[in-house]
Length: 375
Ligand SMILES: *Cc1c(COP(=O)(O)O)cnc(C)c1O
Image (cartoon, rainbow, N blue to C red; front, side):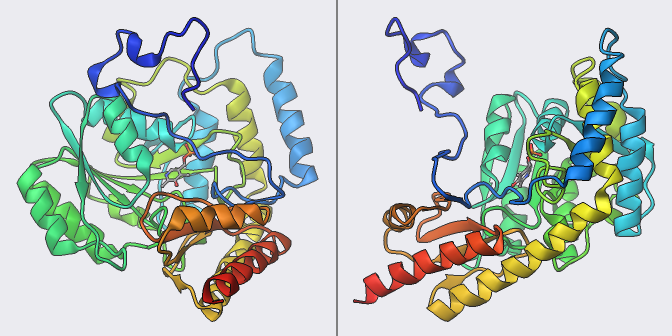
């Protein structure tokens, strides 16, 4: 990753911020192998009619590219609010919704607004590593909170950690990445109450994978709780990771607050046009989600039948183990042409649900691995 640049000058030779010294950038290895099940992408390319519609809307947008885009993304936020209202049954309006370039940017804007130097954020690990990385990037101190061995949140320990550290931002990822674990409503409410008892603080429920969950969204929790934000993305369920569109739902005051830090015109007219086209095809895209949920459930069942331990999954991926050496197992699966993810959770690997053919290739690879190990 940190190949030496021309001139022999390394990152650490530059006058960069102390907290960035010696760190590596985020990123899964992108290897050119036949079956890539490592980044939780949706394996289905966008359907052709949607591709056509994107071309149409982008052509329209192109005619106005001499002008800055709608910096408030009014049409897009209106459609996102309609999508949320329709799929969760909880009515939200444009004043509740904010959009940015991926939910990573949403998270960055939240940390710029509610975190920052002298402030701290907590997440319950293993979880989405970008929460910690974006915290660091915004000068926010990072606290690693606990989980049980089965990867559910250890509530009493989490409450103690919150009381002790009094964080300014609390991340709850449900379903959690990389474990697939959903967090139940009562646990989120208990964590929210514990957080507010320690000090007024922002609770971010990261629902990047919620469309794949057996459980309903926790969107309605924003009602009467201005310090609770739900973040979402079009990268997973909508099969549009390349689009870079994330969004949040919260009280209108939160939407106003993030506008204090957003860059002017952060969301390009091309991005807005593309996202609007995708939202017109929501029903088709959610149809793929149903197929992926069935494949996810098949992966869980078959992996258990082969003899692996599998963490219950509410997402489009499955955590499986246990390996004495997860990295060695990762390499052996890769040697068979299948790329999965080693998230650094000792003993465990993560596989994204792909197409039925891709999943069969993966299952064949791990069956061989299992035979080899018991031989
Ligand atoms: C993939 C993922 C995201 C999405 O990030 P984008 O910037 O929207 O692509 C957010 N949160 C979690 C937990 C994720 O796994």
